[in-house]
Image (cartoon, rainbow, N blue to C red):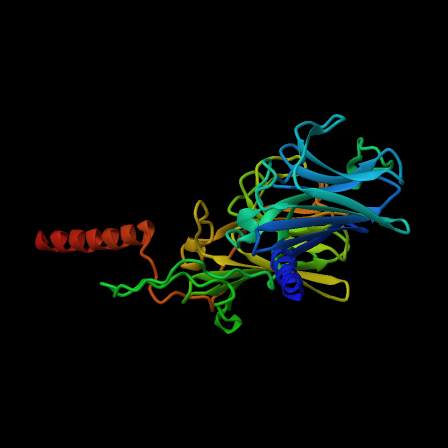
Length: 390
């Protein structure tokens, strides 16, 4: 009998789920999100916590409300809260279709309610967590909102945070599951493009600096050997700020901003700017980012390759070809919003110029320089021909 109980205990342990935290966020102060995974069983656990006096939740997969897969804590009153999953399809109430899947629960500790959802990585047909939790992508789009009552309704602009990203923590890693190749290679393997972590900070040199707006500084570094660049932007942690590259105006620029729900939740966001409204464009992810705060100054750092699929803004500039169109803006709050029309809050139509120390071993021959060579040759030839008749 003891052997039977021992065997059952072993089976129970083997079937139990062990979760590790893979990502956390707090886009709205006091409302926390924790995403954990059980890699062995391909299970994800989503925990959201906040005040039990009103509904709250997070949305995954898009930078705006429409199209997001949302997980909320809501109910008739504070004593009847539950976890609800939705596919968000409209701005009105209800905001979308409820969906089911996984195991849900809500616990309350004082005035704080915590909703828990456990399901398979691909348990929600509206959004698949597999690429994120299997380390195929480093981040996913994230939004958040809360309401003034426990029943879901219009949250108002001040109670929502769109266009952010959820980034996997460095401790949440993946092992390569591919079988190693046993055949002898017929050619030398090509060297992979190094990741930002592989490019040492000692390899970077400053190539350009700017401060289009007072106290909002920009520094662009280059690692020419590995064709990596690093963008650093610094400013006050009381409001969002950023720079746009590749366009003399807002529309069409690639923007790098520092923004967040509050001064303690600031992060680096990449966008392709395509409209004047809010949000001003779709979020993109070409590199890895971090922020550091010293006193009231926050510095956002982004490391990325010169080129990526569909992205080639910096390659010519860092290879000593031409200048780069540059714009800048800042806001009055930490959440991305309209910056205002004054020159104190936005500057357009400027250029970023390489510093004289940022040189290239082989300077490219431009069309203009080639024309000058030929023009000089023709002048010399004309003088020579004229001398023959004198």
